[in-house]
Amino acid sequence: MTDSRPALFSHCLGFHQQPVGLRWRTSRRTVTEFDLMSFVSTCGFNESLFMDAEVAAELGFAGRIIPGALTMSLAEGMVISSGALTGTGMAFLGGNLETKAPVFVGDTIEVWVEVTAARMTSRGDRGVVTTRNEVRNQRGELVMVFTPSRMIKNLEA
Image (cartoon, rainbow, N blue to C red; front, side, top):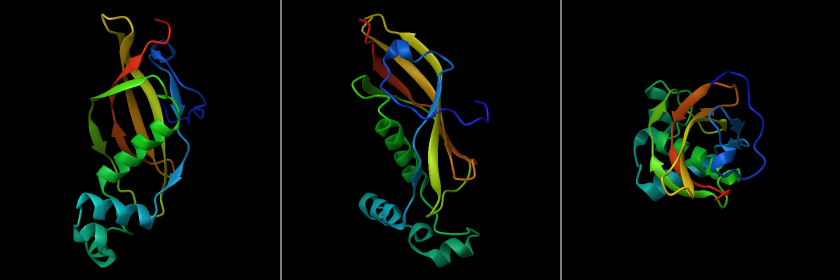
């Protein structure tokens, strides 16, 4: 993926509207203290690293750190909220996840999406689309990469 910021996404995409090389981005979202505490409390991530600012500082972090699972969940929600999968997304099939840098309370993130593979299934009414999703902070720094494969409805079938 190039370092140039892609255009903001604006409508739903069927299988044939997601060719390899298509790039777009989500809107931005600032991660709040409420996001952090809600997530760690609800999901049982009761580690001092996430709940105690002093422990985070002692471990060398420059602020309240966000769990990678929360960063991925927010990023995936931003992709879904973009509308790209509205009426076309059928299933999340899996993928890989790499954390590149920490995300902190107060950081603003967005997701840059690039289609890296697309193949029609034998049924013909759906295809599998794989994307490289780069989560970037307010400084444009890469903080996470995940590569979901999804079953996408063929709107032309």
